[in-house]
Amino acid sequence: KTKSIEQSARPNITMISLGDGIKPPGGFYSKQVYFTVVDSLPDDRSQKQKAGSNGCNEGDGTNSMVWPSGRILAEAVSSSFGVTLLKRYIQRNTQVRCLELGSGSGVCGIALAKALGYSCKSTSKNTANVLLTDLGDPAVDLLKENIRRIKHFSPVLPSCVEISAQSLKWGDSLQSERSQSDEKFHLILGSDLLYNTRDSYDPLIRSIKDHLIPSEGVVLLAVRWRKPDLEREFFRMAESSGLKFELWKEFTRSEHFEKRSPCQLSWKEYGNPESDLSNRFFHETMVSVRKTMKSLGSITEEDMDGMDDEEYKVSEEIQVQIYVGGYD
Image (cartoon, rainbow, N blue to C red):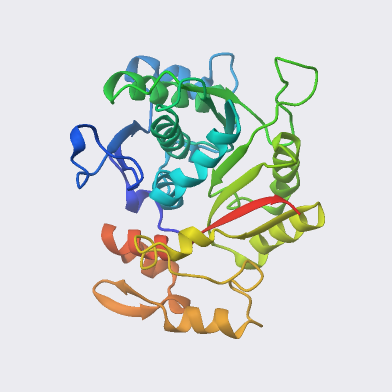
């Protein structure tokens, strides 16, 4: 269940907070670091967004929205434990390559680039490349606009980090400029990628497998559960293809996230009526609806539409988990 778009209209400019792994300049460590993204192009390019630069108008329009799972993943990759993970890759590789699937407005990929910049700026030779992808020219135009904003309206990214955008249809491959093989990446991330239908799961899995470095590649997948019976099928399909997903332990143990996204159920348990742990989670987890507390399992679409913005945010984040995936 999700709150209707009409009930959750957002401003044109959205502020995204980064995690505690990135320290602001000047040593003011208690100060929060932010960046902003837009959800549409300037008016003089609005016609181009509708039709695409070559008439392409693929995608379902969800790319312009900043979803709660995207905010959570953006904070997590730039948190202290997220930066620790990135530093391990930077120390082992002279160039760290990262790919975001279904980038939307680019909040997760931009946060990743910021975190990589903070992690690698102290080295003289190590670099990182972040590629944001989504479907069709209008979506890519929006990503490029937000990349431009980051480079001009925020503290400049260190020269050790490159960030770019490209169209990618799940199931297709990105060709390496260095060889005839598919481009491979150390880190692949995505948020809210399972909302659609089962038909999208096979091409999504193929895109992950085609582009993940087998020996050390890692997938970070933020999931906002909506239809657990359907979404668990993605993980079953991934596992049967050789990809294994488990909860990101550092995320579940983080004091910053343990109240916002407290669920520690495995993907096999979440929303499974045969799981006592899942049934207990949905019965005992309480959310506010019009200032009245209700169990998560009893929330209806009418309840979602009746929530104020803060109630909606809390309800969404409670249903977000982050999984780490890789070759079994």
